[in-house]
Image (tube, rainbow, N blue to C red; front, side, top):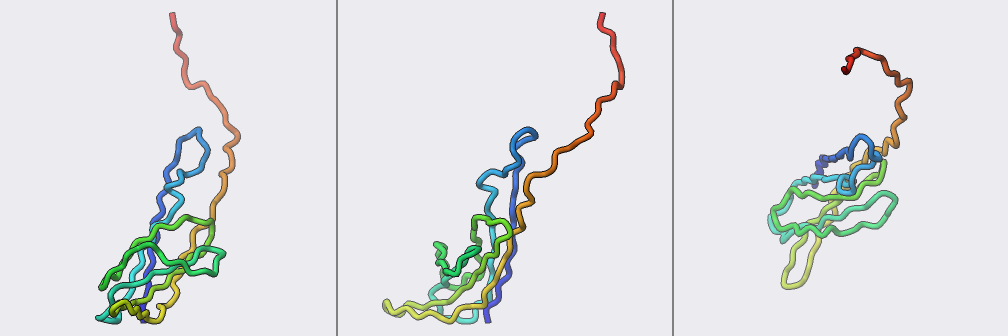
Length: 135
């Protein structure tokens, strides 16, 4: 049985006090760390697949996973509140004859929903705190 542990790290950088509250494009991704249990000793590598929110199609990652690799980082574009699915299989290559194990369990991670634009402050007041006479 292959197990996944998914941790997510999302970095958001504020653009400035007077600019729109939209994080830069590079911050609209999540770095997911996937780990699994290697249950064989004869694989040539692993195949990692994922599904993005709203899709039923499994996509192979471009990550080259050699034998005995049990951790991988994968950057995905964020979809507000979207659920991401991952699975992995081991494979062997015997003179061009590829054999693929069954797929692991499907691990999932869900992005936080976009909080939207914050409400504007109100009831601002100005109070004179001191005076200085300029000659």
